[in-house]
Length: 77
Image 1 (cartoon, helix red, strand yellow):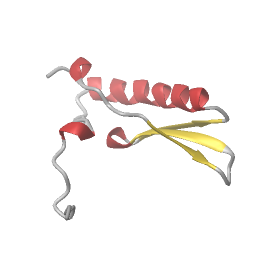
Image 2 (cartoon, one colour):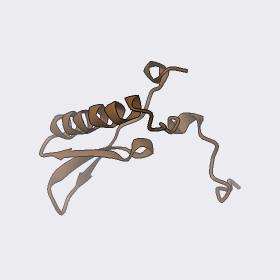
Image 3 (cartoon, one colour):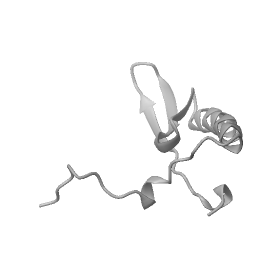
């Protein structure tokens, strides 16, 4: 699988106390923030580009969370 085949989720949340949106790609430890969702996502995408440049130099990339096995501690009853 090439890195172009991977699809990572961007999680966006609003931090009320800071009055800012935060966008993150948890698997890649990438974040961005801004006054608007679009600004936060744009910053996260810029950070993602930097992360992918590091990957191009041989750094391993974790798989997207939708292909990770659930944690062993997770139990559904």
